[in-house]
Amino acid sequence: MEARTGDRVRIEFTGRLEDGTIFDSTRENDCAKCRIDPEPLEFTIGGGEVISGLEQAVRGMKPGEKKQFTVHPDDAYGDFDEYLLMPVNRFALPKGLNTEMGQTLELTDDDGETFLVTVREVSGEKIILDANHPLAGKNLLFEVELIAVN
Image (cartoon, rainbow, N blue to C red; front, side):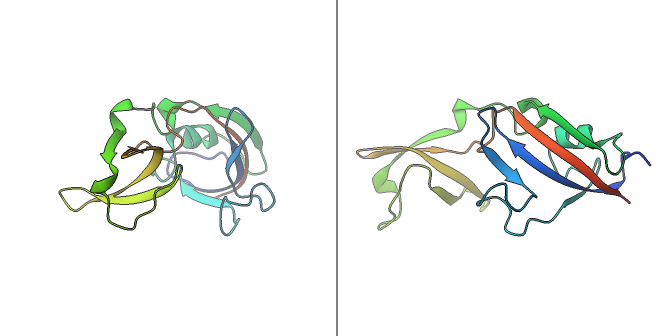
C-alpha cells in the first residue's frame, strides 16, 4: 500500500545538514540532543504537521521502503531573512539576564504572541537577536524508512 495524501504514516528518519551534522533523528544513537524519546515520527500526509518536502518525499513510498533525499529551503523553513535580525540594546533586556551566543530566548510581541529568537551576536551594549528558524536557508538531507501506513 503506497502512502497517499490523508494517510497517517510512521517513519524512522535521520536529518542532516550538508556538512553532515545531524539536526534531528528518531534513531536512538544518532545524536544526543535530538529527540528526547527516539520513537518513530507519526504524521498525516497533507496535514501540515511536518515540512512539506518531507511529506512530498514520503508520498508514494511503501512500508519497508527506504529513501534518501534533499529538501531545499522552499519546502522546509524558507530562506534566511535578514529582516528577522534584530539589534537590541543590552539595557533593554531584563536585568540579570545573561545573554550568550547561541542562547534561545522567548519574547512576547505587542499582541501578546510569544516567539523564539536566538542570540546571534553579543558585542558591548548591542545584541543581535535572530527570529529565523535555526534551519532557515539550509538544504536538509534525509534518510527515511517508512514503517507503516494507516
